Length: 152
Image 1 (spheres, rainbow, N blue to C red):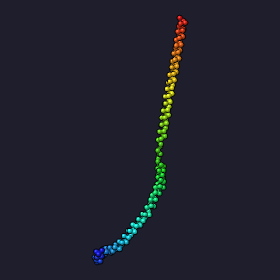
Image 2 (image 1 turned 90 degrees about the horizontal axis):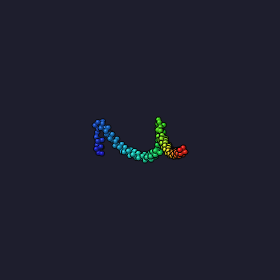
Image 3 (image 1 turned 30 degrees about the horizontal axis):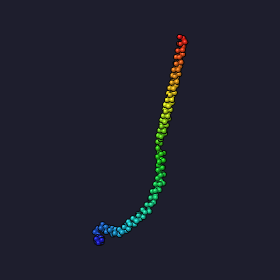
């Protein structure tokens, strides 16, 4: 500090030295006030943060719980309205195809069962017919024998 005092009391050689000495005196006076202002500002900033933190947290939760779902629904609705052609469901064609296959399979199974029954009934009918023909042939054969005996 003694050097500062010595420098200040030295007679200024130029006008610039004179201004420099004045500014140094002003800095010495303003320095403690600036320190006090910095400390007061830091204290006020701390108070402001303590006051603002719960309010910001409450606002964040309010936005998240109330505003965000509304904005999301609005954007989804806007996207749905802007979509030029809504995607068609592929579920119905598949259901029709599966039902058609099921009905076709059932029809084929019924056809096969009826065909087997018809074949069985035709076999029985053919067996009856061949038995009837064979009986007729035997009958005709007996009559022919009887006729030939009568004629001889």
